[in-house]
Image 1: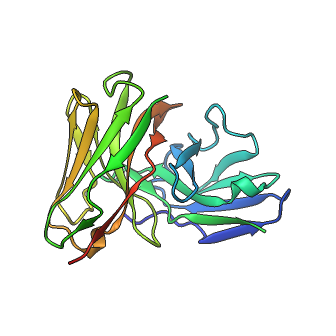
Image 2: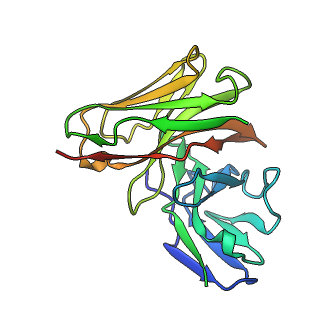
Image 3: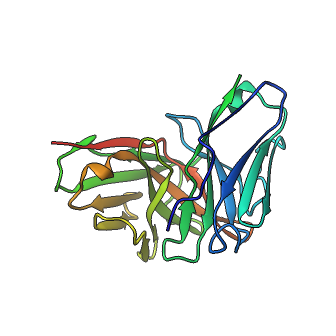
Length: 111
Length: 122
């Protein structure tokens, strides 16, 4: 079971929107709506930002939104802010015995 | 609020056993419908799920791990543990404990520890 593919880095200026992709297969991202996204500021605890492809937990800013098309899920951050600079990891249920597979991680830089 | 904290040796020799503890504070490890997991983040790579344990003691492990792994729980201490045997340099990573909870229609990791770096080196 290979990791889901994410771009290594994405950058944007304050106020802009950026999108992070997460590409898997029909055995994970494409086959199930169990995709999640985690924000991770190094040295801190990761934080669940999106679950079930597009749902936000209570307390997560509505600047964060998720979607999916085929085998690719996406996380969009609108109105980019300095505090959004972090690593972002996608994850998906997989029908393999691994159960949960993660992406390769994306570093978001706010210019 | 509930918090998770990893602890254990930061340096382990090759072929030895990596043992970590996750202490749950601010709430009982047995309250609610959760499972308790270990994950790791090797430098330059993505997160890797290691395994999980329910308070019943039932476990699931990532079959792709090269080092044999065991996760256990001590509800009286509000702790759960991971043991990774016969480790190699490939097991060097930041190790995280996390809580799994149902959100929507599936289980997700809704609470994490800050992680602890474990280096495998002689």
